[in-house]
Length: 176
Length: 215
Image (cartoon, each protein chain N blue to C red):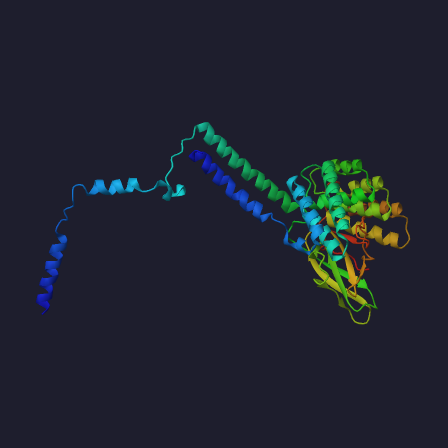
């Protein structure tokens, strides 16, 4: 039985090894079909291109890239020194003495003026409300909201010079 | 269009489209009343187009929204801030950063004439001006004449670090709160800074992180 299988395999292999004789016109027919294929179906992006650039042009492009890199680096370096964009933050305590308040929240440039984002917590019976906020260097306007309705500036901080909306704000500068 | 032109258009166009998409209207502005949003967005776009920082404008609009201000008031506040930041940049130069412009706007609104800011900028050279400008603004708001405030800040900023400058400002605030005349309290800054024993131009290393005093 195994001998019969070997013989069969041998015959199949021999058949497969026989050279295939193609019609002499086969290549021409294939190429004709390829040429007849609509060009639009071959995406422009995948076609190979050859660019020729003069040395002066190549230098100009290289100089442009170099300038872009230098400008970006300088800009990033400046931003890293600029208060307000440095990632290192200082933990800033905000304190309000409001013994009669039921709730106090902090709103300002640092929390998109969201009155629900930064609640203060009451510290025992002293009537003081406290929260600490990590702030990167910069200049911030802020205020407290007492009982959800009353906006008051921080009595311990400079008053912001403008009052665009009828309730004054405080201003805080955080250094590097 | 030849191949090179298409290549350049693709290379430059894709980042441009991506950047434009990224700069689409800030979703935070959805909090504004519709009529305010319609007017504020172009102001912010215009500011961005001329290279002004837009975050302070968004913040001002959000402040108005949180305070339930009427739309015209919000629009007016944002326009006014954009104009003042442009004015501040004219004074400080195009390299001025956001914090510097915000502090300069406060100083100008506090009554400091533009030439005071120019003097401060020229005197402090390449140093970041956000804190010196902020201290000048705050001292002016406290009642110190702007010219005197700038002179004091220039004298101090040459020898102390930003954190020390802020600490000294707080000392002035405390003195004024206790009844001292603003100019006299501010002049004391120079006396307080002198004992550091440092030569001009040497910054002191801040001993502690910058924090605001408790009331």
